[in-house]
Structures are given as structure tokens and as C-alpha cells.
Length: 489
Image 1: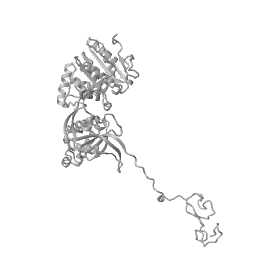
Image 2: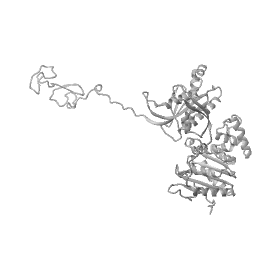
Image 3: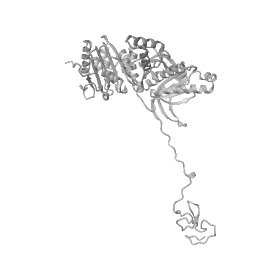
Image 4: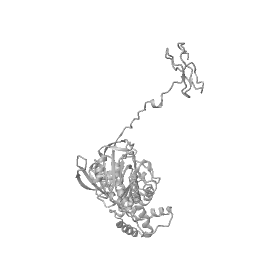
């Protein structure tokens, strides 16, 4: 082999020159064939020999994978676990037990997601859920407490099924600051004391109860009726934890009403013109002239506080106050505003269905509604099981809807004499029932001793209300008056 660099003859078979060390052959990177060092292209496959040889895959250093950073959040964490699952699993066939646990998990997960929670982990027959991740809300603690009560209701309904084992659950809830991230198993987890405390609270709870810590209770104070359980020492937790059992919602319409009932509000400043307008309308109601007032404004401008202040000023006068407020976690509940006002009309304070059925029948009978038709319609709206006492209605869904609204108006949704009705945040009412109710109230109120004060965001002004606006200084706040109502001048 002749070296082209130093003109030295080398023995056949040498790959490098024995004198200068230059390569005597060039290996094709594509087919591996040997080629003279003066060749620019492979004589076997025609590939270019000038392309530098890439290092093998094994020699390529691995690219380091950057661990995604954790996210600091304020979370409310819910733990739910079956009571006595070991005993039940020993008594049932494995297939029956698997089906029963799956049904419980579906019911619990549906209740959690309905209120905006995220199920992050199933541990055997236990469930861990986050409220505040991945989507945060200003009322995550309230959502978690409502989800816990909804889980208890769902389990109670499962237990009513024939041949279904009687299940019981314990639910613990805590709120606090955590770091949310993915561990080695690529599963979302919360790093901090909150998850551990929630799990210990769940273990300390009695069967079929929802227990929250003091940190969670501070966020939902006034929104639920609670039973104080005192400070308890939990396993693995250094400090004693104050615990509360959630009994049921208190009926307060939002945190403003809860704050007004549990502690003093800040001094009400300004809005005197608007209050005088409301007071003058109320005086006309007392004189027998019905009024409808719609308060419109941007979020946080003080619409609800204005109504609260007006209510406080007429508290000494005899009247009936009906109020409903929609919320984001009820946006998938059809006719929630209608059902809420009906329950206020029936004065239901118990969750026992056997006490509610007679009350519903008596209320409908007093209004002259045919019980065989009215009870199934309104019971379905209120989620009240009737069993086999009432046969299914044989009418199309659209006809059922019309009859339902007609019966609801006759019961007490209609604005009656001496009644003050308030509807808050109408834009969440899913377009229909409440808007229609306000329009009907506008027509009926002018002939009855009644006042209706719907409160909503600026985007949801009903068509039946005129655009007579009075400005809240530089803000987009206004009070609108129904056509034909007196202007007080």
C-alpha cells in the first residue's frame, strides 16, 4: 500500500502508514467498504467519504431530563375511606366486592368533580382529592365541605339498593400551603403537612361524618352548621388539631351573609343615593304598589353588600324575604335557583326524606295543585325519592318542564303579597328559569304588594327591563327599574 502523504510503500493489509501514521484506507460510513485515501466517494455504494463519522449512539452522552419544578399552592385536601372494608371483603365474593368498591368510587368521584375537585389518587378503597389544583377557586374549602356531604348522600343512596351491603365512609379535610409536583412515579402529589393532617383527620372521624380542621373551618365559617369536637392529638402530628364536624349547610347565601351573621361587617360608606332609592321603592310596596329593581355592576363593586344593607334597614318591618343565589358549582344543576327558593318556601330544615314527602304533599294540596302530577314533578326537581307511591309521569320532557314551572309559580315562586325576593348572580342561572321568573315578577309585582331585587353582573341584563341607569361614580354600577314602575318623583 502506497502512502500518498510520504510516498512510502507499506505491506499489503496495512490500514495506516508505518512511517507517518496516515490512513491508507478510508472506510465508508454507510456500507463499511474500504476505499483508497485519495477517493472522495465510496467505490461500492457511492456515498460521500468526506462526511465526518458520527459517534455511536452508545457513545453519545445522555441528555439530562430537567425535573419540572413544583408549584406552591394553597390547597384543601379531602381524604375519604371506607369503614370496615377488611370485614366486608372477607364476607363477599371478590367479584361482588370489586363491583361494590367500583360503585362507591364512582359515586364519590362524581360528587368531588361536581364541586370542582380533582381526584388524584385511589389507595385501595380510599380516595384523595385536591380542591385548588389544577384550577383554583376562591371558595375551595366550601367546595370540599359540600363534596364531603354529597359523598355521604351518595353512599346513603347506594345503601338503599336491594341486596347492597351497608357501606359507611369517613371523610377528613384540611387546608394549607403545599408544593404540588410529580414524584418518581410521575403521579401528582402534595408535599407538606396538609395531606398528612387530612389523612389523620379522616382516621379520627366517626363513620358517616365529615370532619374538618380549624384551618378549613376558618375559611367556611358561617356557611355550615358544625359541631365542635375540640383539640385532638393525631398520630404523627406534633401539635393538637382543632376539629369540627360538618352537620349541614347553614343556608347562608354566600360569604357576605355568613360574615354578617357571625361577625360585624365594616362600616357601610357611601351609596346613600342608591339606598334612598331602594327605601322609596319599599315604601311604595308597603302602600300596595309592587316594584322590581335590578342592580347591575361589575364583580366586587358592592351589589350584594348594598342589598344586605337594605335588608338590615327594613328588618323591623313585617315582610317575608325569599332569596336565592347561584354558584359556579351548581351550574350543572338544572333549575337550582328554582329548587332553592322552593325549599325556602317549604321551610325544610331536615334531610329526612320521610319528613319531606308529607310536607310537599301538604304544600301542594294547599295551593290546589293535583298531587298525583305535582308531587312527582317537584320531587324530581328537589331530588326527593318517592319510591313506588307515585307512578311515572306519561308526558314528554318539554311538557314536564312547562308543568314544573307552572306548579313552581303556583306554590310560592310567584312574588306574593308582602314578599321581598332576591336573586343573586343571575348570569350563572344557565339562561332561562330565573330570567323568565324575573320577567314574570316584573309584570306581577306592579299589581301586588311585593318587591323583587335581582342582583347580577353587567352582562346579564334582562330584555324586559329598561335602561334607566344611575351611575355609581366612575364605576359601571347601576340600578334599573322595570317599565311602568313609579319613579318616585
